[in-house]
Length: 306
Image (cartoon, rainbow, N blue to C red):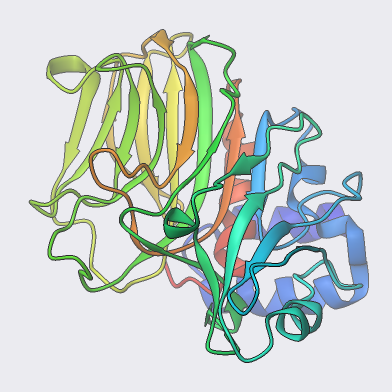
């Protein structure tokens, strides 16, 4: 059943989003943990953050949150279906707001992403109401908001894949410049801008000019929910960007890059103004089937129309 289901997902790709979403939700309700996305990939992720449970082997919480009424903190886990325990979240927050102090790493590597500065914490509850899109919970980032974790690539990387979900909002502080994530060491960096202030997508691996940068125009619309994948491979001579399961930009050169800390929504120079819910990182090359499995799973679960 599981193998047949994912074969259907891969064959459909981006041509039957409605069917993918319906099959996914139906199968999820009957298959339980068999559909946790990380369990479908034989390779191990190096960092994974989500407001849903990503693997059957993870038994921790999703996030640690702070409520505005008295600054008390509490861990929030998952319900029996592997979704965020929204009842516990709303009960804890009460009529006020709630903010993310820690976004727990589900990869098993304990690379938890944290933010102790209250003014820079992602928001997840607003005036007693959960922040959602397509009935799924999201955190809201207001450009200066970010969480930071240790480097999942261990200081350098020549092979990596990142898959994420993002929806930008109208500018709340007067400027675009959405760095969805970075692995930063000065200019020798990995940076993903969705989009930058000129509304282009930029993907930098090792630098911001020439062969280190992919520039993509007319592929991002504000206030639209997207699944993005970012690929870098020296072995396969590839640096690529994929949107909703389709490649939209590439360069026939991979780069070995020096990495340092990981930031989700990098506020320097400009973080995400909008909504985030899931980041998955691999320090390895994924096969086409493996990558499509992750993409189709995210597209279906979050109700994205490719």
